[in-house]
Length: 160
Image 1 (spheres, rainbow, N blue to C red):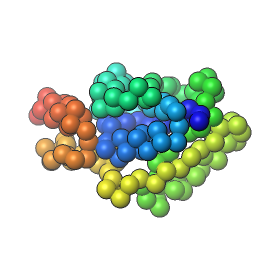
Image 2: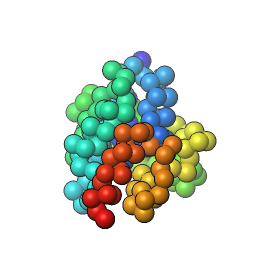
Image 3: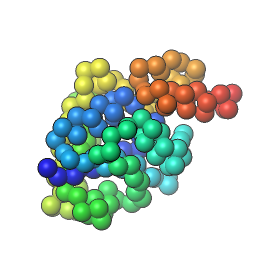
Image 4: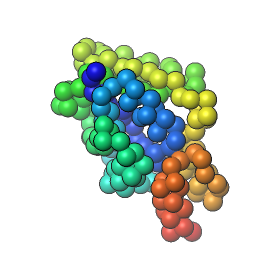
């Protein structure tokens, strides 16, 4: 079975992300969790912090954590991978993901995108929503791995 790349901002990693990683490992020998670094955005966690949080939450040796700048398809080609895994939470995700998948296919015809439906326990979770709730001292237990929960508490404790 091939290697797949699961890209995203992972700012922060959620239990929905973890579910997709674990389910991807049933189909692929290895999953590269690729942190997208966008210089136009100001993430809550640095690239290194996100990398460490993911590594700490995912202890499977078949998962590699990496980061990339620029176009995803360029990164995918550099890594010699031909499959991208993307999660779909709701119908609203489909249109955006459909556009991305087709643009990626135009830029790199040999790269395929595999869509996975997010589990029913996680379809409403997004990193943005988790950050917002945590910023108001809301309880995100069960939405993120324990190490991410602790990191969010520490991050927002410094901002108050």
